[in-house]
Image 1 (tube, rainbow, N blue to C red):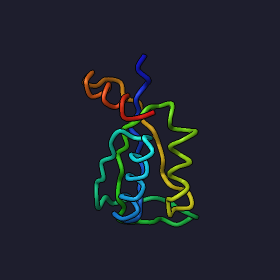
Image 2: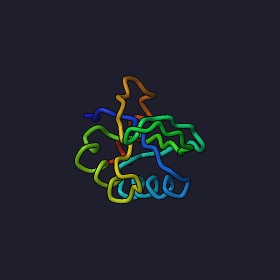
Image 3: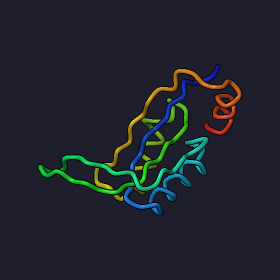
Length: 107
């Protein structure tokens, strides 16, 4: 049976940090694929102040069962942020062949 798929959004401060996170997730088979989108603008409130930063966005394609116990700890272990953005969105539909490939590439 195919496990539910998710897309995980992770922001990072630099391309190097993003590449390190992506490499680790794919090597550990916690992600089938990670896209790195450079130079997004983030505006947010942190510690009572409005912040504006250029960040890197990672789009991580994986299985829902890996998120909480495996993917999140692997990211937190190497992520430079004290509280990194790590959120998951469900994949409702997808090309069957792509979803099967995702199943084969993640544990």
